[in-house]
Amino acid sequence: MKRLTSQLWLTGIFLLGLILAEAAVVIAYVRGSIADADIERLSTTLLKTYAVPLAVAIAAIFADGPRQSAERAIGQAALRKMRLAAVLAALWNLLLLWRTGVFLMRALDPASENPNEVAQLEHYIERVAELSSFLIAAALVWLFGERDKER
Image (cartoon, rainbow, N blue to C red; front, top):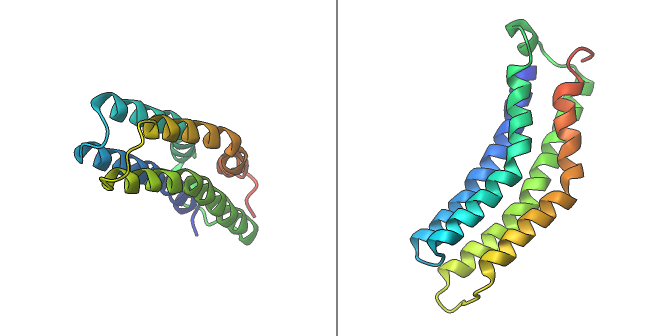
């Protein structure tokens, strides 16, 4: 596997998480389950939450220097680290997405009325992202840390 491919995989995991979470919020809005202020509030929370991981992942792609460095094959040890980084990034996203999915299911159920649902989801996202940041910190450090010593 090439270094650029591994970086794109990690970036894709974070992008997919953001897209899925934002899609749930938009669907709830389109269905009339949340107000204008709520979609802005949740979208802003999601963007704040994903801003750092996506910025670091995208920066790693562009900071990789010459094309031959990005296209260099990574060794077995780096490949194992990349796989672990991908699993940790996916786990972090799943911690956020499961609750967003519950929010969407409740928004689609007309019998489910919870006036605090938006505030609860916002609090959950902020709190879990903060407390689980150790999962993605390792993945994001890997993006930069193995640059010159891949074997």
